[in-house]
Image 1 (tube, rainbow, N blue to C red):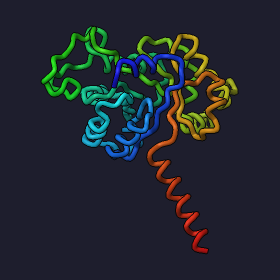
Image 2 (cartoon, helix red, strand yellow; image 1 turned 60 degrees about the horizontal axis):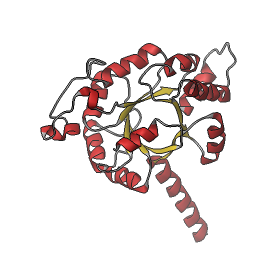
Image 3 (tube, rainbow, N blue to C red; image 1 turned 90 degrees about the vertical axis):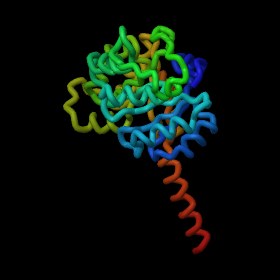
Image 4 (cartoon, rainbow, N blue to C red; image 1 turned 120 degrees about the vertical axis):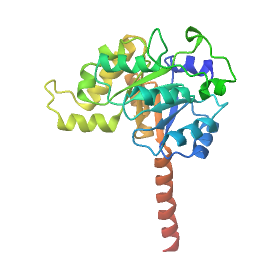
Length: 254
């Protein structure tokens, strides 16, 4: 992680990452070496345990790629451990209110801003071999607030305005599903929701991101104002390549 990478993340320019859910440190190391700007380690739906996450973060040490950890829920202990182990930031699913965003920030920041506990023996301080800087001298951790429900979209302008929220990140599958099962008095469709998220971010100088289903969607998403993309996933790439190889092999054997 570098200060240059953190500065780029907070600027309005394409910032390209990928989704890591298998838990392999080899894949994490390869993804970082391939040149992605950021890597998402998924603790919500992925196979990462605490021990596996630590190994993955160690595998990308020295890389300019930013490590972002998606916790399964905004529990302070999960957020604390991810940051102590070296994550540059946290992604929190299903953020639907200012209060939820503020609670995440409390867990992410040391006093006086937050309530994060201090451990000088944490990996991020080289297990006590490196002096812990004063909290004011530390780079602030990054918060990706996931907007993936109708309720979140309805309150997205308020969430975007919270100091410390860096990226409004759309979870497309959850958002599409939520729109299909909720009563939607405003008649918001999926594309309108995307535009509302991007506009809310732009209005307060924040960034809008999304997990990209198809690379062909990127130009349209860019035109809406999205800048931070998670493209593909380790599992998705392996799955699609296996299917392609098997299909071509069977065709060759026919």
